Image 1 (tube, rainbow, N blue to C red):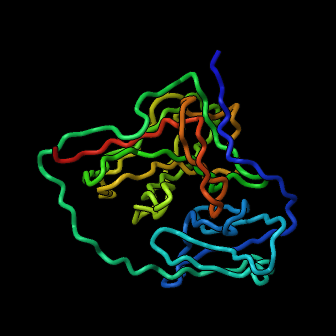
Image 2 (image 1 turned 90 degrees about the horizontal axis):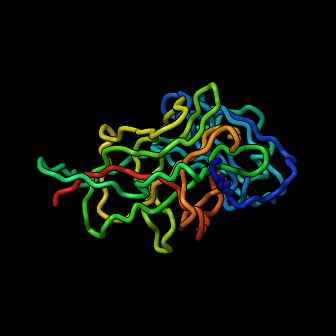
Length: 276
């Protein structure tokens, strides 16, 4: 018998009162922005667009001065006051591409060593799963610190986690996020310049995402985060390995606040290379 530990994003219960529908597009070319994040800042109401930029967001109790936020990697974040957002009905919302300032190019040394950062020992006897607010689990995230040494420049090679059980017939969609550590020791700015969305049909075993073509590097500690892009994932049908010891960090929806959980670690890790 496998011991099951349910990973709970701290639950809140709200009755949906408003449904906001729309489509997020790139202002420069009118193309859809896939998997953009939409939500109310600091609240549990949030979701993620589909591949075609379409979304449906159920919102409970809010006030007119609250802001509906729309964000995507590579674009400027847009905010719409709820007094106006409540009236959106299948309208197009355009995002402006961000002008990315190119930082100093980090050239990977020819001679490097590799190391696994994060939780590298998979515990198949502990099942972790997502749980989000009522209405949509899209945008719920689980995260751990990589524990990279200060000032050690690392180049990310791949991302890994272990699927204990997957009884779904269709593929499941997830997003990998990598965050810098903010001044409060919580996930902050996203390190990525391109979104990393992947699908899996693996029934059991290690799932690996190749990161070499994303050219990700950092010289400080960072967070490894797995984001759910499914409407709901049944913990009895899908779960991945975790540990009883923590800490871990959770966010129940796209623009909710991060919360630190002292128990219930998550077995996420990345392989990095660096000059010794």
